Length: 253
Length: 263
Image (cartoon, rainbow over all chains, first blue to last red; front, side, top):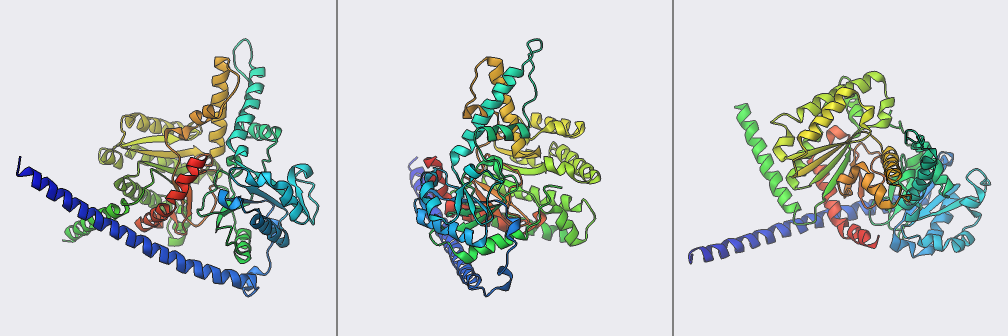
């Protein structure tokens, strides 16, 4: 027994030294990754300024007609700085985007919508105009939060439940099939949701994630990570939109 | 002699991989990883191979990636094997994919298969009624045969898309409420009836071939997931891509955990 205690202590110490060594190697790998990302970030920064100054020919004209509906997802912390969101929307107006949905999970931007509509020139609220009534020189804005995601589907499901219950035959206890994608789509419209599928989703935040944007609308949306809203760049925005206009989808076929 | 050298190289490769995974496990690791295996057809065209060879090469890549994931200790892996939209491809291609799927599903039951090596529980997620009888029966047989496995889980999304999954969950919730005479659906009812509720939400979703969309895959479940779009075609995906994704996940982990707590 006495012989085992020092052996256990020794093997535990060796284990701890081993883990310490592995931890050092892990941290070193992450330092290398950080350096790679910094270098790549510098290249992107230079490219973005070159695009803003019009030095890269291919970005000087964009076929904006291909971009019918754009969505912007903003991280919660970034959404607190409404002035940056307003600046972004002004850039989008300059580029010629006609419809923009702005999302943050907690609805902070929804609460500031009146101020945003006032500060972004020629902007209108999408719900008031309806999707097909946007005048050519204006930009229709939509404000979206997590309540428009899963909770909206729950409300729509309750509408379908009522339809189903009304259709149940007393003889066989079976109801009509009201459970198709079109039915759910229509039920979402009834509860006041926009069901238009964005062509492009720009994510402003630390991580490339859609952060809970309404799932029903994301089927074929191109999702691009733009980095932090605080350090957003006009050139990067132009590049993302230009790249989108070159995408060809085959929709699984 | 050649065989011995190959075996030795494989053992060195395996040992190096174990060391690398030991280092990676010093940081947080994902519990659930999802893959969109895109680019098999483009790979075959790029290499001048005959039709169908891209999918076979893609399957081989899938087996390697599963091995790496399970060696690393990732418990859940979900793959997008066949979308409902894919049924609109040319009938010969759809049939060839169904034949390949049938062959590979049956091979999962072999004693030497990865399922037995790692004790994998397999789920087939999707509208299985859209599959032909043979493929559906094989899938159900594999699910039954692996039901007692609990070490790691493989979710194969076949005849699947997210919007169909949501509609089916709404349908099951409605029928359930109608049967019980209770009239209001709650979010928890829909969540319980989602086919993917057998697994936690994915931590990482990787799409190959450089496309940046989700193509109607796990839209409901990926609100807190880190999305990766890798330029390589699926059969070209290897260990280095997985390691890169995990290193980036480790950098973002505290932000994603903070977000989950806020919701």
